[in-house]
Image (cartoon, rainbow, N blue to C red; front, side, top):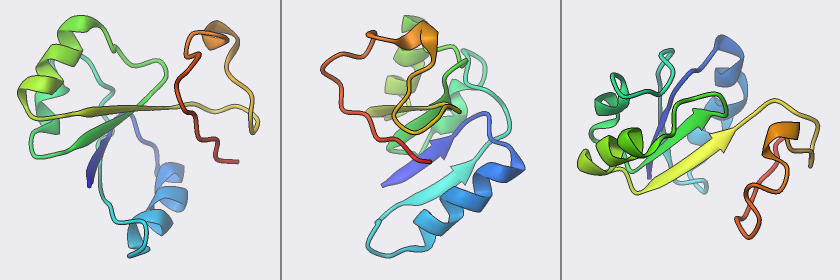
Length: 102
């Protein structure tokens, strides 16, 4: 799976490069410093999934643009303690599997 990471910083490489290098993980990661929005969504062309920071624009028009370039999975990441959602997201993703990285 090819994952396009939006809104990345240098420290993101520290953690996610390790995962991408593991053949059992089975993914390729492309890092973009730009945050996800309607203008940057086409940059995901060629990817299977997008990983956006929680403050990214994940509105319907942006998701439609991602679908048009072949994206089938949206992953969100955020900086919080392990197992804790940011306050503005609490209860929003009920029934959605979440993976916490500490």
